[in-house]
Image 1 (tube, rainbow, N blue to C red):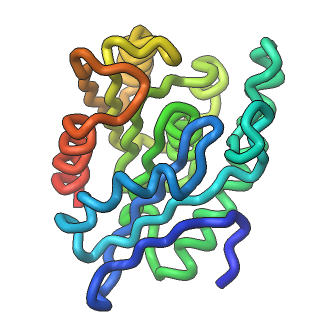
Image 2 (image 1 turned 135 degrees about the horizontal axis):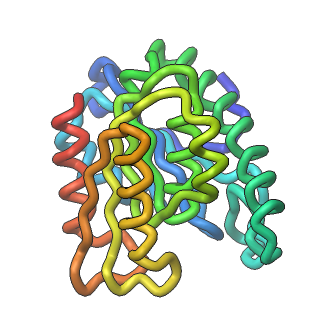
Length: 216
């Protein structure tokens, strides 16, 4: 199948049967190849999982060698929200293609992402008609709490991980997200990584792996 987004696909080794999928969304200015490196360790522990790492549908405005899920060059929350919803619709089409290609339902798919990829994972995951296996987000936040509250359609379980020294997306957003999800009856686990800035350290990757394995 030709997907609507260019994507890196890491299939199970030795032709093992695919039982689950992890779809990873890169950060602002990144690409699927960047985020796919985290899968190398996960794959050893999830032998029946396919890892899918799409490129954003737009070239990044400030880094044309990378991609974006939505534009961040305008300091206009309404504009950012509208652009993110456009991305959601494209990603939902992509997820339906993944489900068809690999014969999987939502409850066998984990959505994960870093920074902007985390933000879009939360919106896509919670506004879809059916629950996903889980959502695992690194260094992200909720784009617009009021808008998301109005559009939530399911209660997919969530893990959010953040570095306490993050100067790109402040770790205060982790606490804000936890409060939001608790108030909206969504199971949320949060982990704050000490001495960590805006990246995914080994500790965060390992804790995410443990969480996903618990859900599978």
